[in-house]
Image (tube, rainbow, N blue to C red; front, side):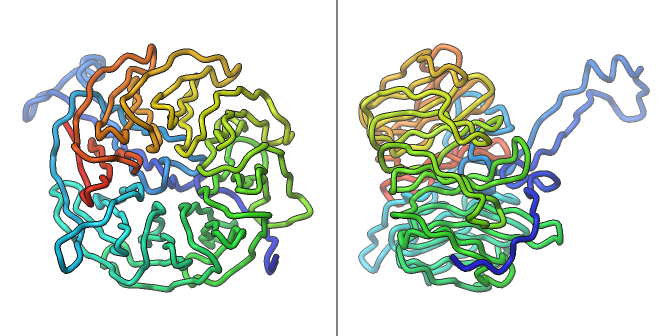
Length: 408
């Protein structure tokens, strides 16, 4: 590991929200020039929440929770066809989209990375330099970051698509980017690679600040733990360990928790508890500060989708065709929702609805309270991409090379 800076850092989310920039819009039912009593005004005020989805799973703890309340039924607002080859064939959009400042950002297996207008579905720009892209991007400070399967990390200007820098690792990249700001105001990004290393890079220059080597591939997007104490980074690896690392990269303070099987997805963190669903057919809750297991349940599913964690329930999608809700404190199963085929897409919580896309080509709205189906829509193609929610719109990629947007 290269260690050039062990300065004390704090999470960017303490003063800049990464995955859920929340704005409150107040609409009063008042005519021009009318004076309304304050208590009547309060009764007539409608609050709408608008949030960004700048990062995979919505926020830096990768909870898979939207600050917006998006309720079914939805309508198909637009469909975007990604660039095809000379024969007109389009590559699958397996990467999960992210949304920031009214733009959708997503890459394809043909190596096209596009920015799409969230409102209209029109292409804003396309960057054609990368290799195949299956990893989700992230957007911070007007820059969009993503990795490709050739092992490069790219930084583009989010407004124009112009390349600012690229950084080469020694293996393909299938996980997304997370970020924090140091006390000195320096934005740093974190990303893992199949070269077994987690990298900390200067976001402005692409310079490597430190790297941390594990025993096998890193497929996960690293989560930044904001819940208690000093911020830390955690991620599961293909070495069957959950790694907990100070944001300084100081290996003397690292902790490793034995998982028992390789982790092919990203963990979710809430209130200092890390939730992991691994390929060995188990789901675990781990106390990050203590580095100790809280509970472990066996399900037999080889998980690839990342869990979503709300205030009371943990939602996990599995290749055994089910979305299951668990009590996040005890691990007790609460309900199970069955679909026709495997679920590789990760669930997203929005209010009282869990949004889930499937290999059966359907987008489902599931009631979080009891697991009943509230609504579904047949997209007509396999969906491995995970939904993103922003500004009243749900966006997801399809196996047919299209990006789909839904709204009221």
